[in-house]
Length: 263
Image 1 (cartoon, rainbow, N blue to C red):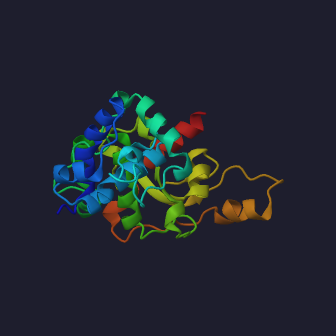
Image 2 (cartoon, rainbow, N blue to C red):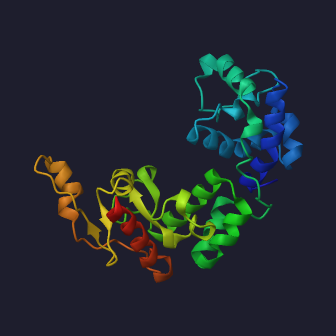
């Protein structure tokens, strides 16, 4: 039985998109032998697909895998109101899936988000090789986030917030301007809570080349919560990974800050 569900998802993705184009609903028993598992375990391979579609606001592709007797998705399906499942089917059938690249393309039997992020943690210089292998932006960003979660021990580098659901991988040099070797490299990232990620992206808070927080726009109308999230943290040192090889690059920080200074 397969335990590498991202790899299994890579095999199922083209099968499901073809089925959607044909307006067909495969059953679990039909898909199980294609990923070397049993019908009860097919849901494990559908979970990464479901999560990807939810995160990137795609129709719920996994919805069209149904039970032979029920004609409905299994109990692990949460991407749509089951009472309105027919509209989910139509959304999936009508979507131009040929425009969406298989998000798990490049995964081998030995690869998963977990193993690839571990490779980067153990050797940050492998970031370019792994990015070239995966390529799909959504999957690369999942690897990037998992890498930073491990590096920063699941804590916001600015405030220490540790609810994993609200922790995000922030790029220092934005994805669109980053070189391939920078897009999933921990040297081009910092783990932040969603609030500080947004403030960082907007330039309301910055990171200095002393690896400290800088808040350049203090305003008189700030609430107490605003002050606590910005002004109070000014000059505070980042909570950095124990491994110095996983720290943000000063070169990339300077590159980002120079961009803001020109604006």
